[in-house]
Image (cartoon, rainbow, N blue to C red; front, side, top):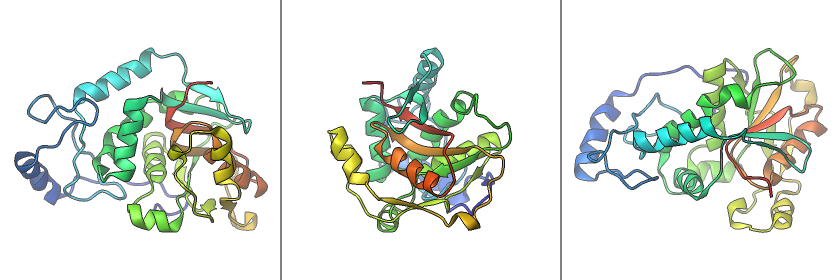
Length: 260
């Protein structure tokens, strides 16, 4: 976990990973989660600096072409933004689609941890849009949507915290993982198709830190998540923060579901 108020420092790729990845690609070639290509078929997206949850042998599982297409589509899209039912504006790097949902699912649920690098870049490249027009011009405070402690131990990382760290590195902001916590374990939102079920699943799931111990003067609080669909998760987290005197300025994510 990134300590409260600290911006993560970039680090070089660990030496074991430089040797393990090529060996693994020779014995068991990785495949691009977007198009299925192997490293021998197309230029490959390079591994980046170590981040939480990554192991020395993790690989990116993305070719440059597919990530480039995503970035190009982002540049040509209409603004990826909409107002959530909780009244907070959400902005995404791209509109969600089946391919992005599959990639994020592979990262979170199927051990494809190296996707943290290309997915983090999608968010970093969109940072000027994601954070534009916020009330305060000072460094932003990024608040990742928390996982329940049991799920975090099982998964080995919190994807929202990794994404918040990427934004902090790109913008000079700070990550505050201590401002809100998940006090009740909930079922996976992705498995609930009905909006009412999603909202009911998150009722009372979050609790904010004791306001008397928090100091974020003059900063915009920005909630960070991977995908935002109905807005139930971020809405409940924002409500917990608001109850503690910490209003959320905006929600940002990799993929945002289109209105309707």
